[in-house]
Image 1: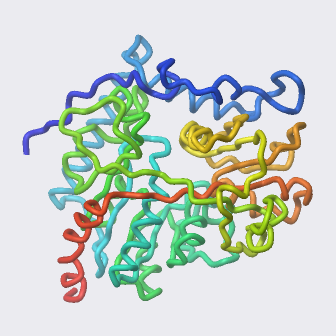
Image 2: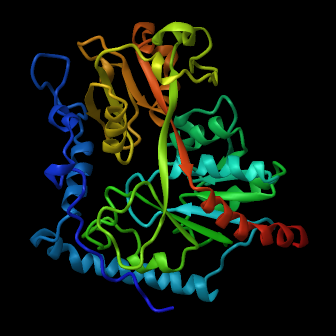
Amino acid sequence: MQNCWRRVAPMRACIGGSSGMMSSWMMRVMTDQRGTSAGPPVDPVGRRRTERGWHGFWCRSGPGVHALAPFGRMLAALARRRHRRHRAGLDRAWRAPVPVIVVGNVTVGGTGKTPFVIALVEWLRQQGWRPGVVSRGHGGRRSREPLLLTGATTAAEAGDEAVLLAWRTEAPVVVAADRPAAVRALLQQDVDIVISDDGLQHYGLARDVEIAMIDGLRGLGNGRCLPAGPLREPVERLDSVDLTVATAPVAAPVTGLTPWIMRLIPGGWVPAEPEALSGEAADSTGVGPELRTGVAPLSALPAGPVHAVAAIGNPERFFLTLEGLGIEVVAHAFSDHHVFRPRDLNFRAPWPIVMTEKDMMRCRAHWDAWPKSLRTRCIALRVVAEVDDALWSDIERRVAGLRTWGAQT
């Protein structure tokens, strides 16, 4: 196949890179409600500022990018070599006795992968499959020994994404740095198809379908590999995947790139404690230590401004989603996978504290040590992935033959 991915326009429409994309929350993002003016930074170690600085840097092609370009070309060459050896069967890859679908990305940062995996698990179950998920467990304790998640597993042990996947889907989820070992452990749970979360670059596990996720607002940045750009692998890696899915039309179009579009739809509120919401929702919802599963309607959020807290790969998307709901947002961005402490959320203004479900999973591990007055202010926004039926039809066509293949192996 002729390569059609090499021409990538510099990403001018990155968050923060264009005044047209600026939203009012950006003007307040450094406002710290502990005082009347900007107080100490909400990320005391500065990692969040560094991450946002890198993404802004990767939107451009200036002298700094050119200085790092040789290192980016070196990584690109190594990534190409690894992928070629994988495709040629020169490097050993363990093949599971059931079909494997890999969902990953070629860029660093959030791409909407977790909501898509949740939707994929639910769709596969509707088609009669018994899906399970393997993940590295980013943000949890690093271990090569597989860990099967239970209702008592915390984000400190398995990572926030894996805990959220297990909670939302009720499917078996196993985390381990060794993907083949994780799949072998998962097979003991009577699954007949495996989803490898964030496994695009883990070539030690053979795969049958590859799905690459793209953040539509950030796109592919300047099209360069780390550290000169945001790419883990060269852009042409997308030539070999089966499907690409973007969270929005890609801001800087790439020649030949026509991804499926996934919409992230707000689905309701999940409070830490029932008292955080108003009306009938207070009787039936709340996360708490036991992870109740009730979801309150969007109308249940008390009127007025909120503290929006995000420690994810792309916090800007979360803040914009809240503003799209008509909520007055004071934004507080933390480093990805930040472990929250009560002092992090001890804002002077006593408004509700709205966070992502991933952030809620991390906070939940320490609820018992948190003052109840703080817990009752914490609310998570549930986000649901919505895709065209045509995408599911495309996936159905690809996995239909795998059912027969899996039964024969």
